[in-house]
Image (tube, rainbow, N blue to C red):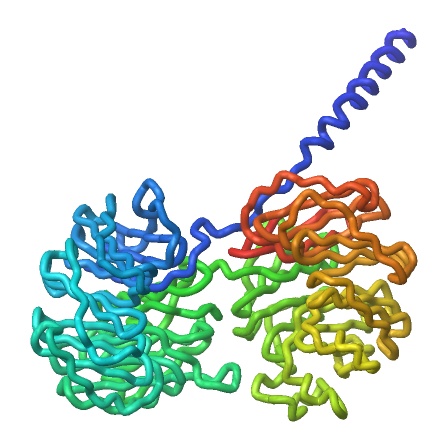
Length: 628
């Protein structure tokens, strides 16, 4: 009996030994989050309450036939070219046109099931289109280009307009009467279908990026510097005060405008700004809070209630109350950095103020409001509730409640004057207080460093209560004026900083002194196991290692020339690196050999971290989040 039990035990053990390598081999990276479109949306247009289209980069055309409940790509077979599509217009649910880069005009007569590319005779970018009936249409674009068609887009003729300024908006109300708007406040007017164009005084010198004519007398144009001009007689234009915010110290550019009637209108702008008027633009007001921080490039009011807005990072917003409130249908900004406090709690930050949070070890992620619209490049938590994020425009924000709310410690309009109370750059480094940060590293719960533009280094030794500037290049070698992209500290004393031109800077005394050197290719990240063993990664597949604390560096052989953006070692042997186009590399011998791993994404990956228990997490473009 004992012999049989022992034999059974041995067989089970052998089976486990045989299957263990197979089980380990089956461990793979899984995709937790990723956009389905990976596009920047430029325009949205609804021909009625049910039928709408969105166009954008990567030849993207989306269509809804159910009022936006669902969106599907058109055509079913991808278009045989990859360009940015700028504007879309339909006359009815079947007949429509799209224009874009390289002089592209696409036409559909079946609601977008199929699209026909038309010969326009130009490769100049087309930025706007207007059709008044099935035959008569106009398109405008770079270098003052206006082309017209009288046969539905089959053939196009160039019109002489008398300017080389870019024309980003064009709007016709009938076969004869139309307007065009563009660079330098240019406003053009025609009453003969474009055979002759006349200049109108726009009352602004700002570039006008969009134009909407409600009828033959009433219209609006919007553009850079928060510009809004309006006409009530089709001839004279007056400036309207947009009241756009100054998120980065300057008025936000306004990218599009649309009205439901003579009174109710919406305009969309940079940093997720939506402006609303109920009196024809006599007064405009930005909506608060912003639904997203991404640039919004297109807006369309279907009627007095239904409205849509689209923009960067797959952004689709919908309003059913005339633009007073907005629901996020889609928003997938790029994620640049990720940090786990423990095995459960993690945060990821990215562009347009993106902030994601998990409380289940990365299985699910939910957005949090960072209170910020800038590019966020670093995140770190010192407890379950207290954390910091850094980014462009000198952004530094603090949370004391696990990310539910954030307080901005910086002043985007500072311009180096030291107005942020808890951030101090003294003496000849004071101008760096206005620079952005590209990375953040906590060496301990009390000591952290953020690095960034033109040699910016700031340090906290009191858990984030105060931040002081440090000079990482007192010897003026030039390394300290390069952009710094990566920082890694193993404790409160020893750390490495890397950046442009192969910059590697090391400190062993918490930043009191620094040892700069330059190695060649731009470097994006560093990781150290201890004071002696450190690796750095960068452009063109660069991985370098040092076993003597950075005195000498050895370039390691890798099976790719893709840019590498982040590196992590689990122990002296097992290491990982991630980079552009979904690149994932692994080593099991300390970097002597690196092997390409199967990746579930083609999006650029920007960061990789390990939880205390050993799970790996990588983040990247289009809100890509991977787990291993």
